[in-house]
Length: 405
Ligand SMILES: Cc1cc2nc3c(=O)[nH]c(=O)nc-3n(C[C@H](O)[C@H](O)[C@H](O)COP(=O)(O)OP(=O)(O)OC[C@H]3O[C@@H](n4cnc5c(N)ncnc54)[C@H](O)[C@@H]3O)c2cc1C
Image (cartoon, rainbow, N blue to C red; front, side, top):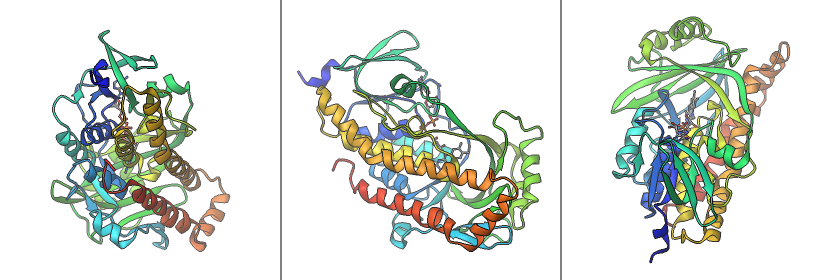
């Protein structure tokens, strides 16, 4: 009897966000039996605008997802002050920009979800299935679903988001970091005057970031925009989101006001920014974590979904050809996955957290000193222009060219 036959499923994934879908895609590619259990009846994304780095694009390609025309090339991407002075330019090597459809791309979340979902074979996604509890029995994991039924899996991956119950089950409660920041963002297909094609411009005044950049959706070129501002986590926004965005846009010269004006009110969304202090370990026995459950991050990295997609790639790569009945082999495979992703994601989470604090929570009058340093030294260039893209490029090289190598 094949060892896997004592399990109802090889790899059980909890959650169908980018992380869960990527684990499913990776396992399918590596020939591993996989099911995704999702509590909601659908796979609709929360939010709208998104950017992806080349690691995610590479992982998607390797897992069989078409990335051509998924988004618009965002190049050059620059950080500026309100006078237009460039404080940092995000630098990716030309060959990466060419090979990965622009290297850093702007898109709409539903397009990513649809491409991933349409590549996952029928029968893998199980909707309306809330996972209630887990028990690692050593030779497998017992999963209890909301309807009381029990499934036995060889491996469980918690891809259940920032408030992950799998994370709490493995590692106990860990406080959420509320950044006291929020993002208000939207998109439009009316291209404003004065926008250079491809250009993504992140401008910071003393308190607020105002950004616009390209996006593409189903062949249509458009622009995304967003504002980040200091905002107490529990405080509601009293005006309409579009009114608030219009008010914020007046702080910036350039096309932002026009872009907000031409955006439909329903296409304006607000998210509070939160993350968690990174864990020192993700996996225990036959259970591990992926995506925000493992490394929730601030959107300052523009990399949470990207890291989630890479997790799926590395999990499948690490489990490829492993005898899932062999507990030690499974444990070693999950350690291998952590070896690829834990340090990299920890650095990116911490960098995104501190950059957010630097831009929005430095008290008066220290913010004048901050601005002087950002304008006249290469500190920002070193961190967001060179170091972060450099680490992403190194991660890309670690991935190799094939999921089953
Ligand atoms: C404002 C903002 C902007 C962002 N911009 C970017 C960007 O430009 N680029 C980028 O790469 N990332 C970005 N991110 C981050 C990105 O959105 C997240 O990192 C990513 O969505 C995390 O995916 P996930 O699959 O880990 O979790 P989620 O998408 O949260 O999915 C978790 C899933 O688990 C399900 N679930 C939970 N509990 C259970 C249970 N018990 N049983 C069954 N199912 C369960 C949930 O219903 C959900 O479907 C941004 C985030 C924010 C807030």
